[in-house]
Image (cartoon, rainbow, N blue to C red):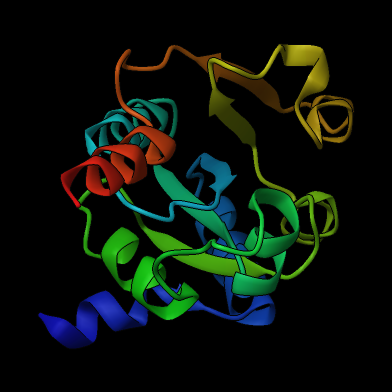
Length: 162
């Protein structure tokens, strides 16, 4: 089982090869991305709902350096390898790949997914890669969040315990 989880974690080229194979067999590939610093039920719900929109779900994860640039010097809490393993262990996730940039645009262009998904805090016209995915015939969704769950909230709860 552990090897199956680890096999879901791919570099960019392996992910592209896998996406092409899925698409060639007629499967619809859904792409989403995020930091996933502390995995919580809100993430699990979003990923499960994203997976329903297609046959395969590929999750792109910001590297540690990218998270620091986006969230500040105290983040990430968990290093990218741990975040990738936790995501890969979810039944809804078929592949995990990391990216160094602040946005996943280069990776989206490289992978050419059929569907792009973000959480409800993103308006459709604000989702990075939306224009490019739509221009190639793909779909873009902003899925509702499960209220009351965020990594920032989890960190604050932990800080308040001290």
